[in-house]
Length: 445
Image (cartoon, rainbow, N blue to C red; front, side):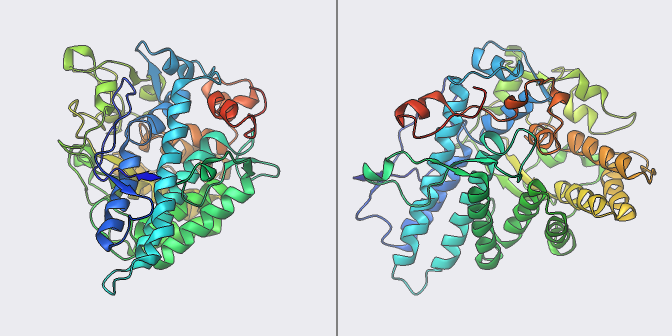
């Protein structure tokens, strides 16, 4: 059976059409050389750039579900996110779910095939580590959206997602699988990211996973799990030895206006031949967009006087209420997946939760000073944690973090959600129906 493999990075347009892969490798004969495996790895990144994943939906829709974005367009499926009233047949959920599993299947193929390439010049362990990093990233994203508990993550009896770790090549491989528990999915994520940290090369090229990127993802994973000492250690390694520096205050917008800045840890690459629809969804029709989403006034008003992030998060004019993090309507904006500011905020929160108030203040104030603000000085533990949460909202706005922060902090009411079950997105109804209900729906839907 033919194994389809996209070897150039592509996007899905706003009409949700499916693009045919431009080449394919036979499941029995592919992955014979290191060039085959590298093409397969490029295909793994291609799955991330798709508009149904990090090319638009998997970070824009969580921000719409929270308090970062408001709906100004016409898509009813997007309106459901804005209204916090998702239905099980929501097309966006189905497209995101399917695309993340496409990404996982591509990594599974690399993991299975790379060790069999007989070439002394080929580092199979590095290739497997790169694929396992990408698999950990995708399972983390699935778990954040569709799994966990109504009150957060890494709690007793949390629900997971179907856990698939072998390639889907034959019809039997595609038979539906029960949902794993949340704990089982976390175990797989941790095994994959730890393998990546231990085995990835220091440099695999721009935009591709390496040891530092895997360590940064590890910090994020431990944060969501509430493992604060481990989160602090991983974030500290990136801050102190990663070689990254924060972009200065007066050039703050250049983190996005330029590409691959000194602050970038992992940035998804786009260009004229590999575009996305992100700015197109933000921008008004007068500037070539479709005006589907805009920044909320509550986000604008959360900024203190003099905060340089305000005009980046909520543009004052030409156009109004958009973001300067995505400005190229033609679709050439890169997407920040991990950057240094996040590591400072993870280390700050970890320190605060470990009763290291002065260390927490030091890291948070690094981010505040870069934003053009004065230091936060309260030594009250709760006040520090609330201030860090606010800094995460403002610093990471339009990057897809806010909803998952509200979930892990059990603050979904902040987004106007009063029905606890809506903390978890529903499993797409099509997945339940085609699995003959082997895949169980989240409670409440």
